[in-house]
Length: 394
Image (cartoon, rainbow, N blue to C red; front, side, top):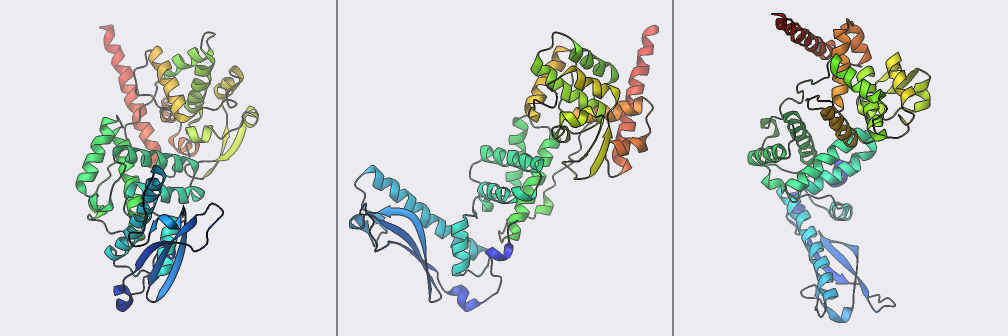
């Protein structure tokens, strides 16, 4: 995790704060075998001096010390000058950031910022860099989800300055997500993660124009769509058919395994076929980190027996979802299918078949019973829907 202390010296010293930090770019005296010298960024501050190697090489004969650029005579020189301009811009951004944040700058802080390249002006780059540094301390599922959100941000607008983040930014980003056909709960979840990374930025000294507590992400708990017993039987019958393509059989096998165990896709994908064939296995939930022991029912075992590639060939969540959606469309199951629907299918049908909510809480690894009771309400609604069929007798 990023160290706040590594970036900022929070001591206040007015005299030192007002001392200007000067930077210049100059070639080293040493000339290599190609006749070129490496450029160094020279920083002076409070009677101290530091040099940072830039990895850019120039011919000293064509160096303009006053303008600190090459006297361009060819495309290569122009390209080198662009690199030099980027160095100057980066150095300036660091100094501006410290001043706007009312933070004391030192040579050590400046060198650390410059070398580690933590973006301070562009929120998109800041998000990506912090996520990269967090990768070792978060689950793969969390990393992949937040990486997808960072890519949405970059598609929405490659450069998002912290100074441009206000209520209108959130309004426009929500509209962008809606046009991308993201569900309301997905949009709300994305906003929640963006707020998290903006708080990271605040911890490292970024000043925002808005109070994040005024931005409401909204509920991330949407409608629990599920397959009713007839629809599950349709899928199971198609899975067992002789004409189903192998890739569809594997994808549908994973989906049905979720329907009969209640496991999330991330938890299903970490299981080994050999362990499952024993009929009972233990694992830690990817999302919660909680341990659980699962005993497979006969139907879950039959899925393994009928598809030799199940838990051998692994698919991504997105690829599995697309295949299952096409299958459900073929079977005339007109519901917005995604893999999490299999978990809701398990919970709802367990209650419909007379299961105990307390036992369901254990099976689904819910931390509180109120989560589980949602499936009781869904089951009651399903019973009411089935009762309406009796009206057809008259």
